[in-house]
Length: 362
Image (cartoon, rainbow, N blue to C red; front, side, top):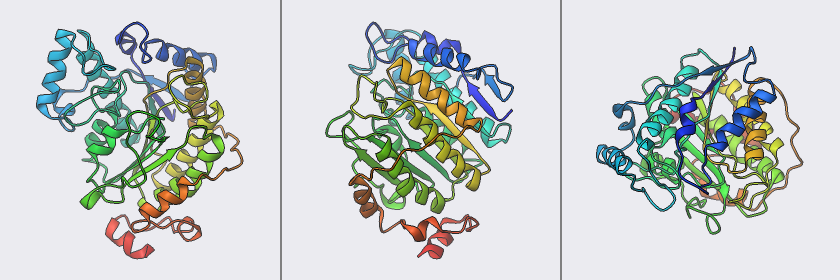
């Protein structure tokens, strides 16, 4: 077995209320799709039940006062904000969601599995150290990464949710050991209004936060160009020990909340690129965590394609359609990273120490 799927039926008990997009049926559709595709019971896949994160785990990322606030708001059924309601079980299930992320990371970091996909609810990438929002209570991705830092020095996070992961970006904004790259719909037309190319990090973390805002209507061809021209050179130069993906499916053409136009097939070849780089750079170690995505068919097909890619299936890439934002991103990052043919041909056995790496590629 090479692939772990982390899942708990208790995730279905998180119910934000009638009409809310982040509804339990999202996971039901995903699980049903995986079962129909023969992946749920595949001999190459193991479904793993998570344990709740401890308060200590959560406080690796979040202020203790905020953790206590979420617990109190949950008990009182008072909302975090207008989009992020709570019920009496919200705190409990948010702990289990973070625990699922930790489990997915540890299974891969320990070498028990080559890769993993955690089917989590509630999602997490809009949660900051001291506040939540955008359907998110605790930042599952950030908690997982921080929990792994005792064993790993460098983690590359690729966020493909259509909404910029403002919480994840903020938490690691000054951290040079976490390279965060977000591909999302342009913030002028979509929540949360962050994620311009100029947002590149601060102090030691400058250049380690990468934002690629895609205009409404951008589809497979634009994403193909972005992955080849930005993701691949960055990951090759950064030399991560693990690649983690905030896997949102709301960039899909069917999604009701966004205006991007990805196909279901795109999630397969995006995963192919991620897994190929992981195989070349970090012994195949890749972790996918579920974030957004609100059309049930798109979710089912997209997750199924990623899991098939994790098992080795290859998906056909489209012809590239190069958006202007590629040049904007390269300009914003030009002092830190190289792009183009020279970057693509960098040797794969560069020293791990980042300062030595910088000297070699100058």
